Each structure stands twice: as structure tokens, then as C-alpha cells.
Length: 545
Image (cartoon, rainbow, N blue to C red; front, top):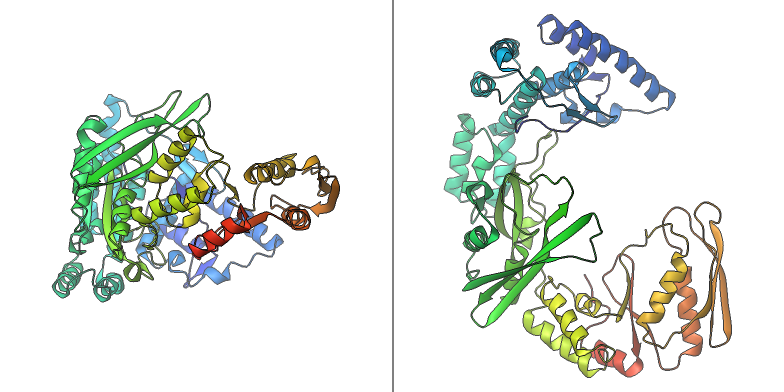
């Protein structure tokens, strides 16, 4: 259907915004021939239903009146409003929050008629003052090639281009450009050129700003063909040009099914990429592809998810304040932008009223340099000398070390978590509502204690539908421990953990579970007192974010 077709959020705006109501606007668009009588009737009918709904529930929408995204005096918002009205005559799948138009099929014999009608519709948009002459000129060849095949599709494209034209104008772009200048991401001459071109309306897309941003590398995956053996190394070498010190001598990769995350009908495939830089090797493994029935292949090549992380492992090893950030540009097109923590912090690229994306969208990265490759080997050595890996076979230990090498390690706890049955961990206390989950967690804690906590006769009567209040307990060395717990919704009652810790405190004179941080859930390791002293001395416990 063309790259302009979007799944759009249908946002019905408040009744009166900046002096112009939706009722007035739909009437104006009707008189200008942009809205049919059917579309007008359906809009007004639904509008009354929605107003009654808000009134009945006491919903006050006046707080949004100063939101630029709702200001109907802005041309691009008028186009988005027209888009909402056009939905009533456009075939597609519609829900309360989303609308996905159906693909438009046109017979060869009807192409001329469709093109003629769409050109007339585009002329009406221009005559009504909703699109500029340059945008009209951009739309016409797309209509003639039937890239755009319906008034709805033309309006989507017109709204997106008009919005970008507004935010690329000097009155809006100046604020973002000044940020780039103050954070030393553009030179003074670059800033001057940006503002000069903005004043002359020479920018039409946000990615036209990227060549002015220092070290910004654009990677167009559409330019690469073949399999990963052909395109992978060139993509990584281009990425390496974004910042000094990221060169590499060779690249190797392995593709393996992720059995843990897969099932019989959906196979997750991971790719581990290794870059060799002198005597050192850096590896990162992440999602690469998936196999399933009726799969439709992407038009552009695949690269591993967060593939740039392997370069950030290099930067951490160099104690660099910089990290590479992945920037999403468009279908098959990405950017790489090196930033310091200070440059990234409070860099605002998305402003009120933007609906098709911000000036740029840079992903978040961790900036700590505490865990270098050398430090990782030191920590593994400490764990080994403390006897914390003695429960593993050589094969199991090597497998765990391989997993460590394929991750981005930010905290010492990340290393501990990679060793099988060493750490008890719940990533999120919003855990779930399954029957028997407290019994399952208790057994997992027992496994992580490596034989020191051995509960029997575990009772767990939790049931989401019947028992919000429930009995939980166990027997430890002949002593019974029970407590009434309460779980509403899917958040765990952490009193189960408190009961276990109380039992261990009473009976275990050898060791205990020690908390690991940072975590959003529960994370702990069982240690004897000598082991705890060794890990505390090595600064492996209670690590801050």
C-alpha cells in the first residue's frame, strides 16, 4: 500500500480547541469538497456518542486544550482531523484505538480514473490551504505511479509531510538545533547552515539533519544483498567508522536456535557475532530471526537485535565515556550516534504535536565502565576460588562462561546470574497468577541454596479466581513455618520470601541468602560467611546502579 500507510491512533479531540471546534472544521471541509455527506454524517453521529460517553463518566478533556497536538489552527492537525473523518469511507479494520486500512486493488482498466480522481482531490487540498505547493508537487508523481491509491492514503502522506514541514521550520527547529550546539553535537557553522536551510524551507525530512551531527553514521540496509556471509562484515565495518578505536581485524558469527525461548510452532534464532581486535575478542549474542508457518520475509537484510552492543563492550574496555546509540530512521534504515552520558541526558528530540516520530530517536545505553573484560575474568576467578562453582561440571561451567562472554555485562550480579543454580532471581515482582507459583519459587530457592535450604511439605493454596488470601508454608528440619499471604492482581506477596529468610535465620548457622542489586524484583545468592566476606571484600555484593 506504499510506505505512507500507517496504523494510526484515532484520537478524538476535545469539543472546542483554540477557538475552532471540530463541528466547524468538518463543515468547512464539507463545503470545500474534501468531506462527503456520508463521512460528515457518520462523524457527527459518532461524535455525539463519544460526548455522551465522556459526560456520563465525568471525563474532563479540557486539560488537553493547550496541547499543540490538538490545536486545530495548525494545518497538519487539520489534515489529521480530515484523516479521521476519511476513515468512515475507507475499507479497513477499525477498533477503539487503531485503524488499519485495507489494501486497495485497482484493475488495469480503472487506473486512469483513479489517478484522475486522486489528482483532483490533491488539488482541493492545495486550494483549501491544507498543503503547500512543494508538498503537492511531491504527491503528484506518487499518485501517477499509484504508490498512493486512495484519498485516505493521499491524506496520510500529506499530513506526515505537512507536520514535518512545520517542525523543520525555523520557529520549531531552532530549539532542537540549539540543543545540538550546546551539547557540541554540531559545530557553529553546522548550526548556522541548519538554520539557514530551515529558513529557506529546504528540509523536508528529519534525516536531512543527520549529516550535520558529529560522528552520525547512516546505514541503509536496502543497499546490501545476499546472506550474512556477504553483508554482515561490511555493516559492522561501517558502524566501526562512527568513533575512533572501534576497528577490528576479523568478524566471525554463529547462528543457533534459542531452545529456551522457542516452541514447536515458533523457533527463535540467535546470532552471536565476535569481533577480534588484536589479542582481544568481543562477542555479543542476540535475536536474529524466527521461523514459523506462513512467514513473509522482510524486504531488507537482517542484522542481530542491538547489534551495536558489541562495540559498546569495546568502549567499556577502553574506559570511554562514549556509547553508540541506535537511531531508527525508516524501513531498512538505521543510524549510529556516539554520545556521552552528558550529551544523552536531557537531549529532547520529541516535541508536543509530533505524531510521525521525533527529530531522532536514540536508544538508551548504560555508561558504566566498571566491568571490563579483564574484570570479568577476575570475578570468575574469585567465584571459583570461593567454591561457588563447585556444583558445576566442567562442561556446565564452560557453557556458563560462554554465556557471560556473549552478554553485555554491566554489573557483577550479571556474571553471577549466568552460572547455573547459583542465584535466585525474579526479574519483576509483577510475576503472574499461576496456581502453585509460590511452591515453584520455594523449590527454586532451595535449588539456589545448593542443599542448605531443603523445605518439605510445601503448602500453597493460592488461586487467582478463588483464593486471594491463601495459606503458604513449609517444613524445614522438622520445624513448621506457615503464614497467610494475600495476592491481588499479579503482584507477588513478598512475605513468602520473608518467611523463608526467617526460617533460614533461625536454623542455618553456616550461611544465608545475600541480596544482589540492582534489581526490580528479587535477586539473592546463598553464601557461607567466609564466602560472603570474600565477595564483599571484592565489592561483588550490594552493587549500586
